[in-house]
Length: 189
Image (cartoon, rainbow, N blue to C red):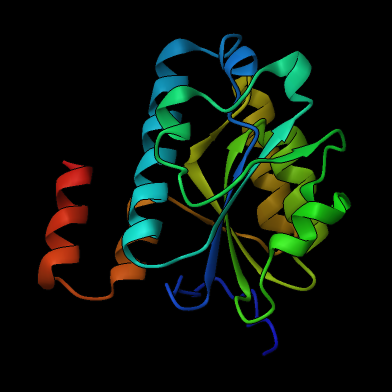
């Protein structure tokens, strides 16, 4: 299956998506603005939970965990179906173990994590020519708000789809019915 075009009116589909959580690690989280970090962790957690309910494969990475710590406990508790891909490169796409985790028949990459202007940016830029890349704006963070804003502008210019957690989750759902809809709606409240 070829990657769909990166049009501005693209919709995330559960059957086509893979969720990637980039480097949401304890020591790195500790240097972020606390309220923004908690919101990012919460939104990443909702994405992870919804992905599990809708059978969207999830991959998560840890940048040099010996120095930056492991994934924050709040997320790690939800990431029971995946194993961390350790890396020292900024772009996840430069890590062969990460690339092996991506499935060929899932052309949409839903990106969340940190930092927006480093690892998220470089990963998205590396994948945008072969995958349809959605960057979840309210589930990414940088220490400096201006750096995040700059990253979002660059990502949009490069053809990435800038979205938000609720849009992605409800696009994955597609309809307001059933037990999965009720369970995911409770997560968002």
